[in-house]
Image 1 (cartoon, rainbow, N blue to C red):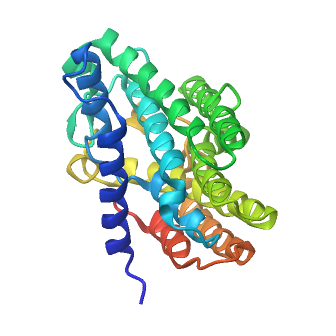
Image 2 (tube, rainbow, N blue to C red):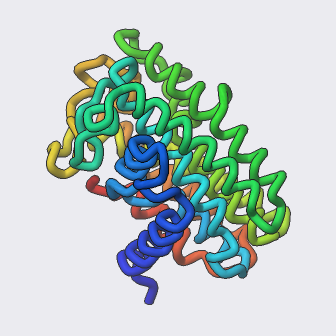
Length: 290
């Protein structure tokens, strides 16, 4: 019987071992920059995106190591977005994963540059993928840019102190959170040289669980404790952000979460290989507590 906890723990060790090898050591000059990069990259976290990348490759019949470089790339890029998201000019957060945020330890300028360096490293790693490297770099660039996660972050900031708006909410869900999850899964299929139907299935699956992840995040921000999340809670309401709760209310958000889980699971029939990990991850996203 498939055990998700074992799969997640093993996947975390796998990607962290790779990142430790691929990211310059903290003593590499300039040491403050590399220490800052590692501070955020190795501060914990669920490693959901690289694990999804590996699971998508496995669902195409490939070993997870086929997706190692794009998996490392997506985690570097995700960490860059978190460093910048925490800066005083954006969310001004003091804690991330229970630790002081990068700018609180290393200063704003170094934190900004650490994020920049992780973004550049992400593209270097993606470009080194042995199979479909150009397509993988293209996926990463599209997910990272002005019509991807950066655009989603802008809409998230613009949505503060405005009346709830479903169109803005869907844009934020899709681009601030969903695009990197879709990118992770699609890169896994590409790295495995998977067939076109698997790429389409990965898009449908990841689009559903990407939206689900953001809804779960909105619910946790309103209901969890700071100890559970490792960061401040109640911040969405304080900033009057556009969230699933502000648009749909708690019960509506929970209903949508279940609908999306069903959509994600239905998409798995398009993969040629085993999909137990992807199915378990879809359910995990909807029920997570941190």
